Length: 241
Length: 250
Image (cartoon, rainbow over all chains, first blue to last red):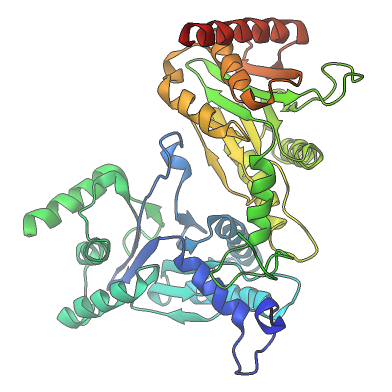
């Protein structure tokens, strides 16, 4: 077994195989998430799959609160995800303590990026097999969506999908974007996210099979929607079609 | 399932993105004693079955069920020293939380911390994953009862009923069949004793021992490890029932 596939070193063709395997690992979990940035709101949306009847449904989630104003949706290895969420919460709290105001999403994304890059360069640790999307409505910059991948690359998006169906979902998001240059109001943002997810998973959701997190300029506190609210949006969408 | 070189350390991912060290740790758990946790109407029951390895051992000293704090208890399987290490960590977490915040640690916080501690051992080349699964029953005044299972990969979820070890499939089928949420803890105990004994069917020639603990309204939601005499009595009755069932079938 060639050492360049075993350890985090450069292979002769310039690739780092261990990092590529980490990306593959994310696909193997079968989760997809969609995050959309509107003119005054950000929405994250993901499928809620409870693998076992005996599990309490509330204990399974891909959407996490980081701060009052920042949320994260994470796909991939959920154990790595929980560890990462604790780290993110710590960073956000420290920033507020030191500087007196909430950490802006781009700054947190940058910190996460530096943290994950370390995992890609040290031999004794493996990369965390998760794709993180940070969202929030920032007081200075407005709605923000940042995706940070296992190699530490952090990029701002207008709309992004991660996970096993990300290619398809990105194509769908581009289609929706072309329609109105991304000028969605709050309702439009939610509907775009749900529609794209429904198309790629090719099934219509019930309110308890989907998780939606939202933050708007009017109510910047990131929160997860209740089943009743999700039901409302799904019904409106169904009526439209 | 051969790792061929990608399975020496936790810090290597295989080409398909699997971490073989974690899968091997789960294998170690799969072939070990069965542990079960069941949430009943008014409480939670934890239990385990084990083979008595040495006739010279004083019965009841090979403990698998431990209390973490007065209203939380856990049971471990697999490599028992690993499980004990995780259990001691749980005790430390609970003490530190209470010292800092003044209230007893809520069940889901404790379970999550243990899950993350287990996950920590799956990242570095210098560590191996914990070779045991831990099922924990907790009670707090915020969310009430909680039953959690922490696996070698660091997965930690809340359950209505869970099992791990060699009798996992059998135990899970029985738990799903019987709706334990409608049954009280006292009614559930003999049923769970039966499930535990059934799951060590193939090891019949060796001497078996079961351990049980409860945390219910009756005990004031304090974790109570049932004493040897009572448990042996339950086991004897359950063994009798199993024999009668088999004679009826034959």
